Length: 241
Image (tube, rainbow, N blue to C red):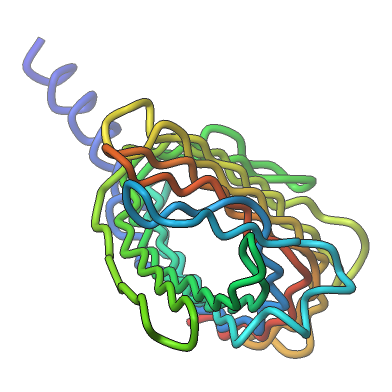
């Protein structure tokens, strides 16, 4: 009996050793994001509503700038990932009965997630994750050349559930599909994100990618309403380590 237990313990330790000894691997990807902003923003009760057009023809006119940074790390089946994004859009127009007005919306969001690799084979991997997204949204209103102006900001945190798939397409080519959903009334009423990229392996450590990203949020608090979609093409370079 003692010999059997010793043999079982040795076999168990031998099987666990490769998984426990596996080192962390990771990657970081900065993206240029051609984000157009669409939706309605009411900064505070009684303020005029800013309406933005997210169509491609409006992107260069309304977008001041956008940036997106993504990070990913894994040890065996444990997965950690996060992203940071910033975008700013401006709009000028006329309010009834012909009063000139200007508006600007700037958002920063930080998403942090942890999860488990539920599928892993030669064709694809699939990760299930959960975490949170922290927001900072600032809106600025200027009416009649500055006679009336305000710059309120909102901070809130949303719980997030996500899936991430990496699919092999051909030698040196792959695709990443990512989607998350959250809010559930805890911070915002609803938030979601979708990202799809096609990636080309240049070297063992360097990848280049192109694709599309969409980030949504619907936040309501008193007279404040933020119901916007930030969406557009992305170009990035990934360094793996």
